[in-house]
Image (cartoon, rainbow, N blue to C red):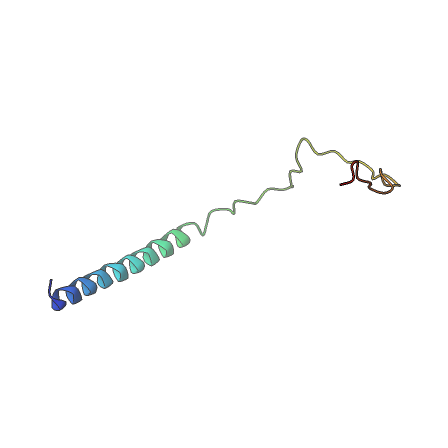
Length: 73
């Protein structure tokens, strides 16, 4: 392939990439303005803590006063 042929391929690829970026920008602008009247996703009145959470008081003293290895090497 000649050098001029490679330049044409690069130009066509650049034009196609630019068109894709512009197209995605237009689609993003349209989808953003269409959702302006809809409520937000996190518009609940209260926060759900979860069904399995329990509250406990921490111990006043540590379980083990000092860690000691079981075996010495």
